[in-house]
Length: 54
Image 1 (cartoon, one colour):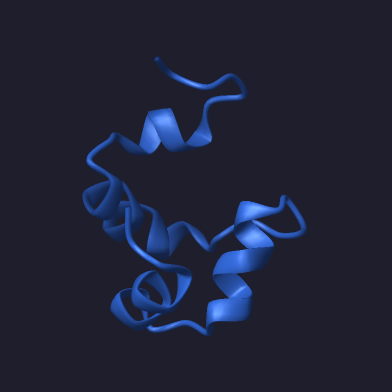
Image 2: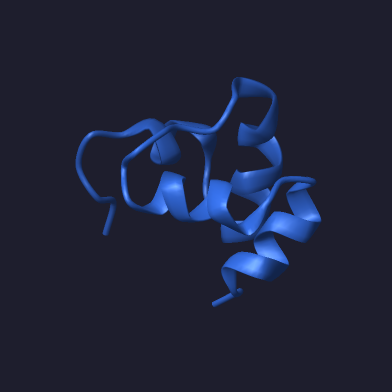
């Protein structure tokens, strides 16, 4: 698992932004979704799912 700092660096955002995403305070912009999906080895659809994918 990558750290918030590393994810932030790879996506060109601040670590606090990644923290807000993880805590449900905000959501990433649509243009970040392909890279986030790539980083976590999932699809954009899985990122947007309301329930965790097993």
